[in-house]
Figure (cartoon, rainbow, N blue to C red):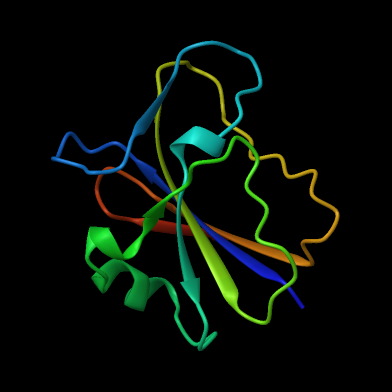
Length: 116
């Protein structure tokens, strides 16, 4: 079974080591070059443990369309997005081998919203 966790954070203006996607137009954008990932081989980490990890624990993605293959671990993706439009943003995943996605959105104030 392959699990993909995703952390989306709103840009808070603080110093960040990860690239920030500045969304300004109403079009589809690939997140590949903005992603960082962390593989949880224990499959025990939740959002609380991930937030405590140092930023260097997440590896920078180097592929346009990352492929983590079939594995028995959790892969957490992290991306920072700043929405410069008045519209809502949607996360689309067209990968057929992902059986479950959980999305955590962390806003500028640190509030967490969870989507499954």
